[in-house]
Every structure is written in structure tokens, then in C-alpha cells.
Length: 101
Image 1 (cartoon, helix red, strand yellow):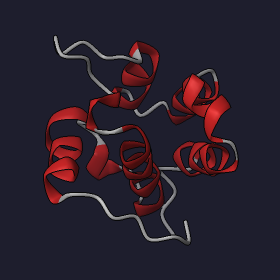
Image 2 (cartoon, helix red, strand yellow; image 1 turned 180 degrees about the horizontal axis):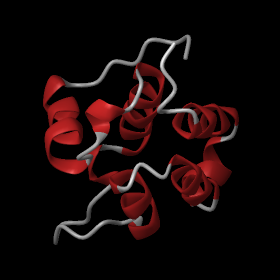
Image 3 (cartoon, one colour; image 1 turned 90 degrees about the vertical axis):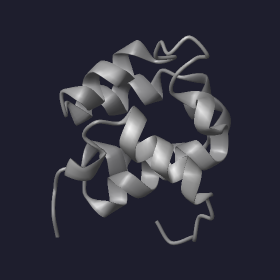
């Protein structure tokens, strides 16, 4: 991902510590893609006000590090349809999120 993403430290902290239990197991490119999604949709994109995942299939896939399923879940979303090239790039970064360079 070539562009720099500015995100508040508190938002990143929420994403890393409270939302994505396996965030630290992903490579930096996949982490960047999830941060970009948070930047694009806001911190509340992942869980609703009651603490339930807005994308249950994505939540399950990321929890299990099933990154093909995570990518498919994103591709089936409004975010993917509305965001275009950026979402396609993020999907590929997440799909390859366990590969270390």
C-alpha cells in the first residue's frame, strides 16, 4: 500500500487490542489493509453498539486466520462494491496476510 494512512492512535489501539485478536499475527500489509478499512468506515465498522460483529463471517474468518474466507466476506460487502480499487487492493493484502517477506 503506497499511500500513507493517518489514523488516531486510539482507533488503532481499539482495532488492535479489542477487535482483532489475531491482528499481530498478520503481516504489515494485511494490518495496513485493516487499518485502511477502519480509516474508511470508522472504528464502528467491525462491531455494533451491542458488541456484536457487523460482519459475522469476516469476524469468524479473521479469528480463525482463514484469510481466503475473510477476503470473500469483504468481497460480498457494500464496502467492496462502493470503494472500488482500494477495496480490491485491501482484499488481496488480507488474502496474503500470513506471508512474510
